[in-house]
Structure formats: structure tokens, C-alpha cells
Length: 378
Length: 64
Image (cartoon, rainbow over all chains, first blue to last red; front, side, top):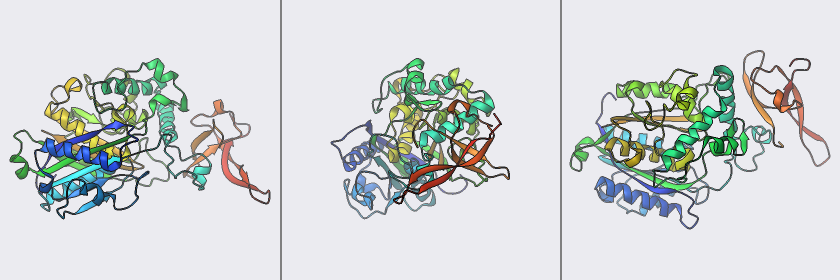
């Protein structure tokens, strides 16, 4: 980034992802936040700004951030609610980072939290009466499936290429104690599970989840007092779709455009990224996104995944914690969880999920057309 | 819509692309590049028994 101060990710924390019917969003958020403060080695009274990433659903609809942060203490800091569908907490992180870069705050905390119902997400809301909902067009897996179909027609990508994404992600999640599904599954099980939207079968869809993430950001000067091996948030960029008469790209939102900005701001290229988190709400997400990030040429994503290119031992390890598919996807918490995994990888704290020589990591988080890309490095 | 059903991005002759359901067409005939034409699809009947219709697309007759 040109100008401004360096931003450090000082602490990260999660509440495990899964189903916790007996716990409120306050419970989930508090546990993640306390873990992040502990990881940062600071007290909540040292936090100078708070951001909450949350989409909504069960629980109160307005002013939730102020209530959630009050679980930790009240010392008068500004608290902001940020909603960008599944990209809420990564967008919140960008606003928090902007404050630190500008010198408005020395520290800031982003909490992402969600509790979700079982069943398919209704984009227009349940019982919506608009044309798209009546005609069955507002179906998230169908949006990914149409892109996958086009990818298959244009480049020869095969259904098993997409299914392999889920096999790989489940394998990684076995080693993630915070993941919703810690079970390995076979290619046959993925391909043989119930068809949802061709070519996407049930085990190629992320679950709905309860969970929370928290991230503490700090200026480099502040961080120096608490760590000798900081992980920096080097660059961040966000965007929304560019109107092209309906001729959108294959991904969910303008990832290639946003990634280019992030690379430029970080002064790196895709070849410098060693570990990545992408928005794999459905398996085509990984294949289409690694192309948009420039890791492989367009059309080569399927074979690259099939041959192990995104495995922990591959050239571009992707979703080392299981991704949305297996770690789970409590919408508002996902961006922060992605950053949490990258930070643990860059610190060498990822245990059996550890990628060797992880010096630079990237997060791509999408939410109904909005896209955020963040670059982190030691 | 009753499952299973097909939806698609339909490219119109003068350029724009619209998302729509593909009806009156065998599901296994739906593929990328299939020529289609607009048709009206009955969504429901109103309280007076009138048909409520919406636009949809079907395989262009005589073109497979």
C-alpha cells in the first residue's frame, strides 16, 4: 500500500464452527473475541475500535455490534456493523485496517458471527414473490452450477474435477479442531451423494453453520510491544460487479479485478503466494477462483486441482483448514476465519495442516457479488 | 418451480443476457449453446381463476 502505516494482525481467535443450538450469538462472539485478545496478549480496554461482521437471521436485527462488544467491556469506543453477505467480516477487517493505516486508531478488533438455520439459503428471503424467486432463479448452488456448466463446455472441465475439491477440503479439515466436519470422504462418496444442481452434488455444498471469528489488528508500533514475529496485513482491496450487459465472468463477483489491485498494492504477483483461502461455498468456487487469482490459466483449474495442485503439499495450497465446504460457513464469521487460518500458517502454528515455507498468504472472500482480497505476510 | 427444472443465462439476439427458466424442453436436451425462444409459463392461478404467466424460454422449435 502506498502511504500510511503498516498494519499487523496481532491476534486471531475462533469459536468452533458447527451447530450450537444452546448458544447465542453473544456466547459465540465472546468466546472468539477472548481467544483473539489472549492470542494478541492485550486486554479489551486497549482496543480502540470495534467492527462486527454479521448477516442476520435468528437474533435481533439492529445494533447488534454494540451489544456484542459490551460482552467484553464498555470504554466508549466506536463500534460499526458491517454487512456484505458472506464477505461481511473480511470487509469489516478492511475498514479496521484503514483506520490503523490512517492513524485513527492504534488497535481495532473485528468480530464475525453467525447462527444459521438448516437448509438452503434463500437469497431473496423465504417466500419471496419476485420473478427470480418464483422462477427458481435465486438458488445459490445453481448460480455456481451454471458457471461450472459453462466452464465444462468451454474448457472440458469434468464433474470429478469439482468433486475432488471437496475430497481435498475434507481431508484438510480432519486436522482442524475448529472445523464442522472432521471426516475424510472419497471421490465416489462425493459424486454419489444427492444431486443438488448439476454438476454440484450435496457433498459439494458448504453447510449452514454457527460460529464466530475474531481478529485484533494493530499498528506496527503498537505490535512491537507484544510480538517479535508479527504477521502483517500487507494489502487489501474490495469490489463489486462491473455491469457488462449480463456478460459476467465465471466467478462470484469481480475477483480478478480486485486481486490485481491487491497484488499491486502489496507489490507481489500470484507466484509469490504460498497459502490461500478462497470462497468455496460450492466446489466450483475453488477451481474458478484459482484461475481468477492468476495461479493457473483460465480453463486449467480443473486439471490443476485433480492433480493435487491445491493440496497442502501442492504448488498453491488452498483452504488448508477445510474451507467453507468442511470447516463450515457461518456467513458473518467466514472472512475472519480465513484470515485466522492464514495467520496460523504464516506463524507456523498450523500443526498437521502446516504448509512449508509459508511466507505470504492470500484471502479471497465473496458475498453476493462483493469480493474482498487480502494479502498477508511475515 | 417443481424440481428438477433447468435454468440458464439466455443471450438475446441484440446482446443482453437474461437469467430464465428453460421449460417445455427435456432436461437432457439442455446444454450450453442451445438455441431457444421465449414462451409463457403459467406460474399460478389468481383468485378469479385467471392464469398468472411469466416469461421463460424453451428449445427453439425445429432446432436441436
